[in-house]
Length: 431
Ligand code: HEM
Ligand SMILES: Nc1nc2c(c(=O)[nH]1)N[C@H]1C(S)=C(S)[C@@H](COP(=O)(O)O)O[C@H]1N2
Ligand SMILES: [Mo]
Image (cartoon, rainbow, N blue to C red; front, side):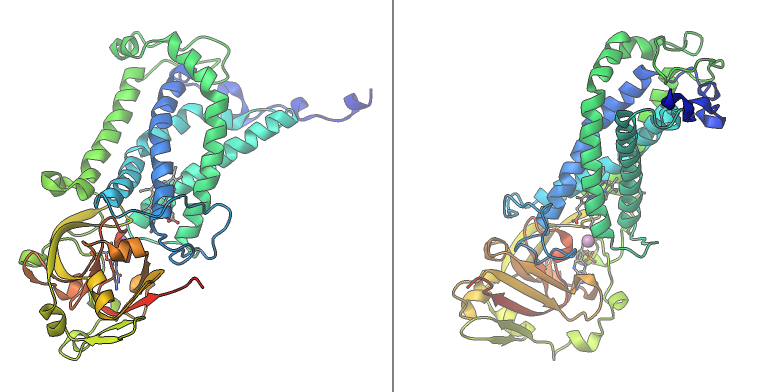
């Protein structure tokens, strides 16, 4: 037969990690992998969904704040990001980053538990097998990529040349597709395996009672070595590490006493003085804001209406002042709630004779860097709590917190709470 004449990979002996008996851990098996898989099935969808929500939150006017470029087919926005509740973005992005970080140990141990499957031999048995392996490669690759880029970004560390947002966004879609496929394929196996052993029983078993799983799963070592840790030990260490990361991270978003132990929070926690003593991402000096620019000569321009304005800080302080307790919620997961006071954006619009607008363009004194401009939707600029803030907690804004004026809008991602505002332009973009 012709087929016989072709030398097929199955005739080549497996070597190294491709040999099934190279994998010796007596703990590996579908049950352990399923328990870890179930934890990820609960946690990863939260991370993926809140990631997409973050993308939507950036986006008051389609395409405007999209740093990636023109909206494409993956950029579906079914709603305009709301301003209530004011802590919405602090919650969604806090979950994204905190749950993501807490899942790290589970992802790694899950990868360890399923490792033999990454070394299937022969590597490609059939078209179906090839497809399954391709989807696994995408799943593992995109997971590692999302975690690595996300964590480094939240640490403000960019050891790469590509755009984090574009890479993390499209990587997110690859992950979602591969994850849904993987979960759908594995769900029956997972349910069957979880029924075979009860978690509570397994948690009672010490090292002595730790025996290999039984069955014909390729995860089970054909020649297991003696156990050096129980399944209880592995799950305890993994869960403990996960809870430990949670405890050291959550405080940066939750606040209160937990903030004191948010040791993994990337930013210093005592950068200001008195009422201005709360988190600072970028200092005035670090982005090149000079005291001369923010002194008496500073004017706020308000454009786009029938009566363009130039207002000094005194002029702004002479207008009706309003105070609200609102969070700044950074895309990197941390947030901080303070009492801001200043002039309502909608009052400024009215004063400048703005009739209707599609977006509010905010420009900073800052000339370089990504966060010097932002656009707000009419809903965001029109909320009565949306301020051009001049003071915080009863004191003038400090230079680092955006003196003379900064944007504070409920539920707005922190990146758009522009500091050192120089100009507001109410724009009509639709004919
Ligand atoms: C399963 C994995 C993940 C998926 C599917 C995912 C998805 C997303 C998406 C779609 C965005 C919005 C991007 C944009 O606005 O263009 C985002 C933002 C973000 N993600 Fe993830 N992500 C994942 C894991 C993580 C992890 C583990 C971290 C770690 C801390 C993380 C940190 C971040 C940060 C900091 C942002 C905000 C970036 C910015 O706007 O500057 N992500 N994520
Ligand atoms: N002009 C300007 N405004 C800015 C930024 C900036 O770098 N420049 N950083 C933004 C980001 S990312 C956040 S989270 C909030 C709060 O950052 P802060 O702690 O540096 O004030 O301010 C935003 N406003
Ligand atoms: Mo931020």
